[in-house]
Image (cartoon, rainbow, N blue to C red; front, top):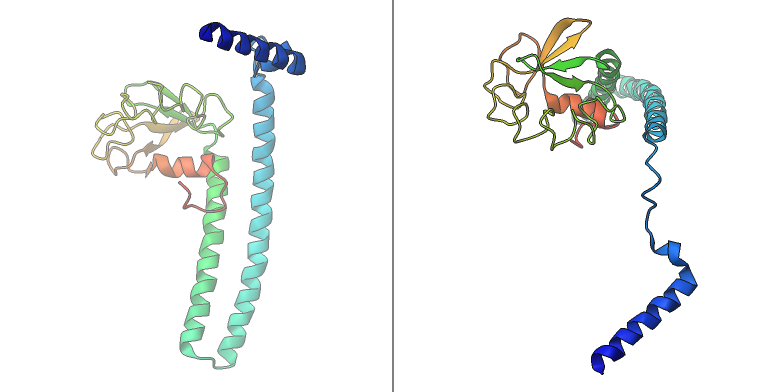
Length: 221
């Protein structure tokens, strides 16, 4: 009797919910409707372009702020202000100028490196440098070349091209055969955390910082 009693209650609750919400409302998502990847990519690209414009506006504002700070510094110097205060203001101006220069270099690198191919020492194509909405980008976390679970990705920590103990991985600090960046058919640099294999090298983490995040600061990743 007890089992029947609870079963009856359960059926009554289901009937009431169905009448209130409708049968279709229990479904979280319609599996018959595929995700529009093209639309998602378009939205991501629009967001990326907006971020680029925002960055340029930030740099213009920084330039104006630095000019104002330099004028204030001149006033301090002419007024024979305290040496410690003058040194502190000089340091702030230098830091702001260095940050602006770094952001300019980062933006220039993003534009210059976009589309560069990443090729393993054994000739395997490992994707390309590009924004995260590009399916072939090494920064596309759901793509074959950017996912942490893909054997084609340098971010796969147990894979042939991503493990720290694998010679073909950019994360093997002592490797002489790290992946290389190829632009217009020419090798321009190695991608490695070590300093071996190529006269010019760039860290994979630095590349990810440039393309995976906004260039508003470099301490997030």
